[in-house]
Image (cartoon, rainbow, N blue to C red; front, top):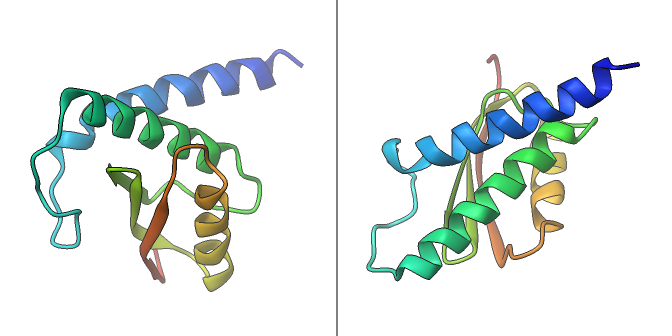
Length: 112
């Protein structure tokens, strides 16, 4: 059963990589640009990383096509999920992450 710790470690590494790449992505439904302090940016990065880790670990969410952005504690979910159940489950998972003030769920239901 060495596979489970390996998958957890791989998931954590992937989350960090996603968090580092988060500022390089743009989207029409992305959070509005505004001035923020370094501390807010770091906090938002930590929240994004936690959200991605929780989504990867959630058994009831197919999260491979979910993109996460965070601005001042507000989390934007973008991308696609295979069903409406996945969309609502993803939002529920994110709402339970420490530091998340609210969730803007822009996930599309359909083929990935």
